[in-house]
Amino acid sequence: MFEPEYKVGFRVLKKEIGLCSTLKVVVPTAFKSLRSNYEIDENADVAEREKAEVKNHFKLMALMYKELQERFRTQRTNEIMHEALMKGGQAFFPRLYISGM
Image (tube, rainbow, N blue to C red; front, side, top):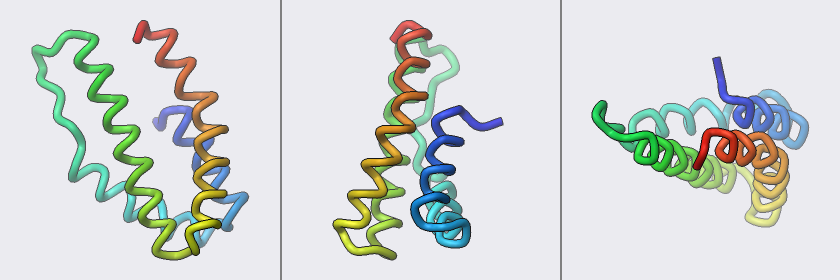
């Protein structure tokens, strides 16, 4: 249902800030992300689709950073995001490489 990097990111957040705080960050971030996703034309080639997917992932990370920063100080937000990016990236980037991007 969810991409592996989202599952990893959720687990990292849950470990770092607890389940309740994770949900308070993830739910608004997910809704904002859905409203602002880059649209992919149905006639787009594979490269364009993959480019839009990467843009959507980075936009999601930026939205999550803002949500975290509203609840935690900047240093704590940076620590949480570093952990999420390092662990989530291990799932995300190999998937891009395998798909040909």
